[in-house]
Length: 372
Image (cartoon, rainbow, N blue to C red; front, side, top):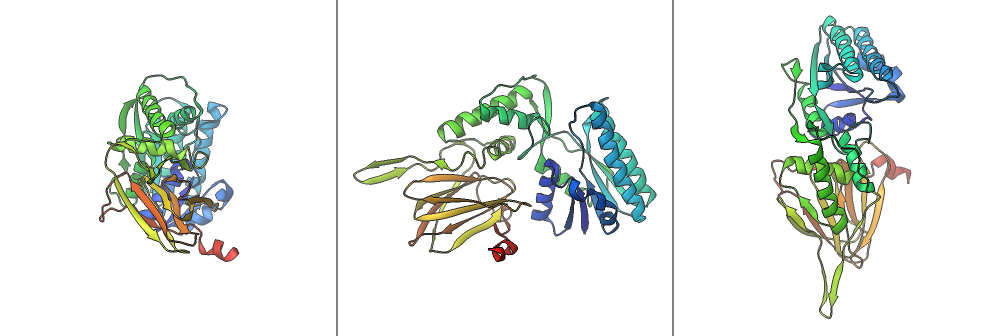
């Protein structure tokens, strides 16, 4: 299936595109501000459309409301111009039930897109989402969680209104959008985690005091803790990496503690790698994975999915460090030394062959390699 995805470079757009790449064979046509004018041509050739583009914040409420309505009208016009049945999915919001600029704008967009879709004989699916959070959200724009994460890392304390809030991780929202491609329902409303705003702040403080201050992996005994921890640590990368490990030496040799974990599952393994050999070349959707070189010299390379920049970390067993792989980042490790490389790997969950959460992708695509 050929799918047009609007807002592909946005917060939810990146997560949805990531999930489509990992779990489906669909061809995804990303639409961003750069190619928005081509929307009618792209929709005319598509089988389905997922509309995620929107305006969350602006200088005035009027800009928020009219901005979302304008984007919806553009999409509706492209659907009408295609003049054939399409499956159209839109990320809606619980805010449509409230009298605010964002809710009114999204509702206006929803109505125009639904009318155009149905008039052309297609199927419109409204995916009504609660408050979202997740990796790479923008502070003061996408989510209060992103704002809290930034404040935690910077050592600031934001204003906290201890309200009850329903939170859904962006990958869970993305899965519902993917499911909507085949759904028989016209309305999908995924449930999030009910929690207090102050509770989110306290968890982030716990994570920071454990992970950043003393190098421990915090308690990861629930899905919400894993999702929130992944959100937090994504904002530390790459500026706060690698993580220094402390060797304890005596006449017998050295002892290095590579992982301390407060709770949840955990699995350790090690590998030997011959000179010039590369391991990895994959990414994960939720897994927390740590690399620690014990012996030899290696280059650990990472690239955020759908981006070109590659980050390289040259590490050595002589000065042990750890790097935790952010979800949605392709990664590998290459032996750049003369001897055998010994690496320890740790994951927060046991390996499950039926659900390995490992998706093949080169860190440096062939076009990058040929350009060298």
